[in-house]
Amino acid sequence: MDKLRVAGGQRLSGRVAIAGAKNAALPALAACLLTDEPVRLSNLPDVVDVRTMLRVLEQLGAQTTTLDGGVEVSIPDLASHEAPYDLVRKMRASVLVLGPILAREGRARVSLPGGCAIGERPINLHIDGLTRMGAQIEIDSGYVEARADRLHGAEIAFPHKTVTGTENLMMAAALAEGTTVLRNAAQEPEIVDLAELLCGMGASVRGAGSDVIEIDGRGRLGGTEHRVIPDRIETGTYLVAAALMGDDVTLTGCRPDQVEPILDQLRATGVKVGVVGDALTVSAPNRLTARDLRTAPHPGFPTDMQAQYMALMTQAHGTAVITETVFEHRFMHVAELLRMGADIRIDGHTAVVVGPRALTGAQVMATDLRASACLVLAALVAAGTTTINRIYHLDRGYEAIETKLGALGASVERIR
Ligand code: EPU
Image 1 (cartoon, rainbow, N blue to C red):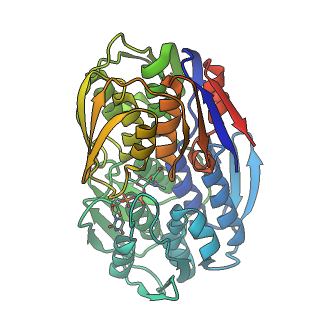
Image 2 (cartoon, rainbow, N blue to C red):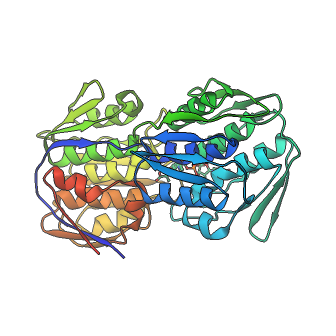
């Protein structure tokens, strides 16, 4: 299994191009199941999760053609209505095929994803919503078995926010009979991106980005071309890298409006970020000030940036109380940061970080994507060499991280 070896203490400067958003690319690929016409998606990130979703689509009968920075997906006929355990186990987001397959084929069989390193992560809200749209759903041998001759529109109020739950129901609703209203819907930029794609395919989606989304279903959807939005979490991760070690780093191809919650938090700690068009410029400030943080669904601070922010707080003056409200076990990076010399105490959903502390390189390992990113950031400031084991987690969501950091001046080597 690949490792990453980082020699800490190198200053960073220069430009880094931000890739397309993994969490927008995955639902966009799933949406290709809604039509028998070709859909062209561009700005797809070259990450393992996207490749896994392409494999899922191919198993379902998709022909995929690689284009420059993108892919054309064509599914004239569905070869199967099943997403098997082997693929869903690899990537929870495979559950995004449930709504589209059911809406197109009238039946779907999708493995239940099960828990993962960051929490239990049930999909009850996806199932409840599809049931309200007329699906008959059973759980059998670890699979969700869903049937519906034709889904119908419904009023669905989510008891709490769910990103992929909202996406699954938006896609199902786009081929349902009548209008679906989703209340307390997720408001992430990835939801708005999916709405734009569905509109391009011929659906009518109103209100995406607010907490009420209305979708008029169609009997048939068509092909289209769509450019996936930039990755706001990759953007935030490089912003933190630059806030720690940067001498004038420029991130290009960003959507500054979509990273405002991250920019606000970083600015509060003393980081100055310049915005010119789609570029963000940032340097490490002379002094970082500790600031508390509470994660929340968009427009709050993203849980997917909590671990990286914690790496930053190990270098800030004062005490930062970091509260994770979205997932129950999202502090796996803490034990590894402690091994590097950080001063962090966990109390339930809260981590108390006292800084600044001089970090030293160590052998570390993380069990999820964002925790791994946090360890890379900590390694950039640590004295000596850090070896990050099991970087397949990083490869799931960060495109060519060693190349991009290397181009900025970091000493990062992949060991195969
Ligand atoms: N939840 C339920 N029931 C459901 C669905 C969710 O109880 O049916 C709970 C979850 O257990 C969690 C909370 O609701 O406590 C929010 O989960 P959500 O459904 O919003 O998460 P998700 O859709 O599974 C997406 C991203 C995650 C990101 C979260 C939160 C994708 C493919 N994944 O997951 O991304 O952390 O939203 O923003 O979009 C990552 O990229 O590293 C990542 C984990």
